[in-house]
Length: 142
Ligand code: GDP
Image (cartoon, rainbow, N blue to C red):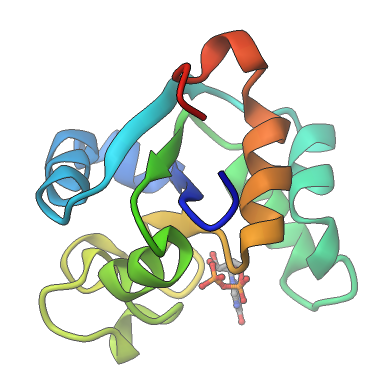
């Protein structure tokens, strides 16, 4: 169902601060259904692959090290207009610029440790969902 899913990651610093429950609650309250979910940890190699699009950025090595530094929760979220609506719910990449009431405004620590990931396009939502979940791990309706 292209257009109706997005992939989120609750990042290591938010997990270690026990923000998982509050963040998932905000996600449900905003009308998203959880269509797949797991608590896992990325190896450096997996993190490099997930963030390959940022390979040439100056912050790439730090980002890979950070995202593979501890447990994460990955989830596929389902809703009409999922990618755009979820980006609104999480707020700007830099929490200093995030609007009041957004997940990053409430729970992010810094530009890098910004609590959550959200897919930036329908195509990437599909690719990122496949990165984390086998068909048997996703809700039947996906
Ligand atoms: P997003 O789509 O809002 O997550 O932002 P990007 O795709 O541009 O960046 C991916 C992730 O890299 C962000 O969520 C941050 O965790 C991190 N990041 C982005 N820009 C910077 C930066 O300038 N410095 C550092 N250290 N991390 C950054």
